[in-house]
Length: 54
Image 1: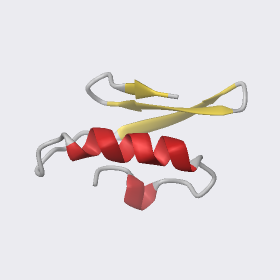
Image 2: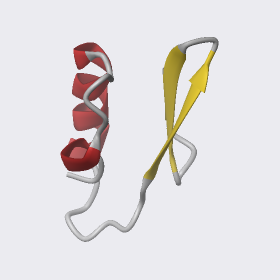
Image 3: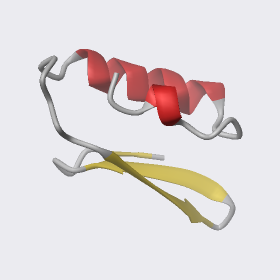
Image 4: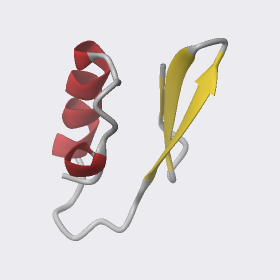
């Protein structure tokens, strides 16, 4: 998967599950990466293609 192997341990499990769902739809040779930011203490991740989860 694109991001889960390097995901910080403090990310909520439900967000990790949503990331895994998105990654399951990507082609195996994808070069997209996630960007993690914290807004008001909550994690928000954005994939290079604009997909945003938070």
